[in-house]
Image (cartoon, rainbow, N blue to C red; front, side):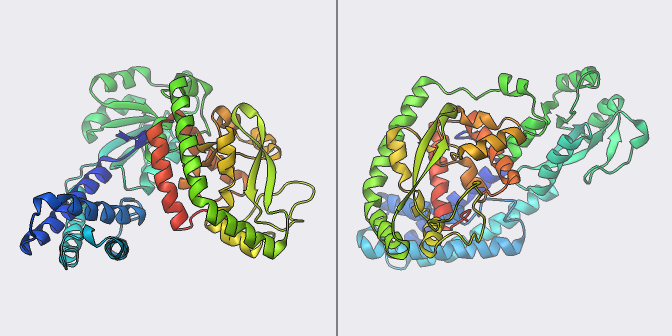
Length: 456
């Protein structure tokens, strides 16, 4: 299902809701046992503890079921999140003692919900695994697109899919292993395989469908209640990005999304201005300290100005705090790489903390950028990438952003492969652009900054 224009698996949502109830119930129970006065009027304090605990779990990737798959990882991340929540609440109660529900209530509740969450998650994994509640998927096609989507399904644990096998035109290939599941039949066997394996979903991954698409077989499957969808759609749902390798322009033209109304643009611009002005005021002390540190280490200029490509291919001048030596780049532009020796000591710190990006708030106020959007690239790289990466120019359909979907989902890019991978995320963002989606990206950006993910 989609939540705020992001695909969320039913499994993740069920786990999240279950743990929300467990944390709230544990804190309320601890308060009830200690006979806390006016508990009903203080339920908002219980809710506050619940929110902080779940934020710590979320920011510790506890709801990424692909990452938190083993029992060891489950225990480690649960304890880390509980420790973080304890520190946050201790600091909050020190600053605002009136927020406390009662002495020792959180400590008592902590042990209860740690055991409850651990038991709930282990039981959930056991039940869903033993009852085989996965959707059974049959692939039509054995090309690279079908293989890539199948690999993504096998590598993740958020969406409960089980691959039955692949369909191929050539009967002599029956039994041949593709990725891991094998070729189990030809188009003529689709109806039999649906009945035999109780197939729930058919994914069509044929690179060339002219004369090869088993139309009648797929139509009968569709009429029988089996979901039939393109491999690109499956890939989009499972990964949160768009598969551009064999993407046809017609898919972009006829697909839902990729349409930003005037009202949406106006609302987005209003939020951009509000957020940027607030952040500029709040970040002013940090910006002054950063400017002074750069000045003391390497002299002027403090700011680094560079031409970038914005909405509809229009160029603009982007401002950042300078993080490289003055003589860092002469001649052909180069991508910044991990461990780049051109980055200064102060530059390394401000890149890790994202302080170097703060002057771009002025670019947002000027209207060259948005708060959320694809990262703006230099004209030289845009020209090179447009030659080698299909649909690269389509990322300029919206204003570039200080942060974006690709930035919170992928590491710092420094190669053609990285640029291609980020484009997959950028196109997904453009397709599903909405105010709520932007707000979730800002929310995730906090996690990226706090845990220093993705910076070079």
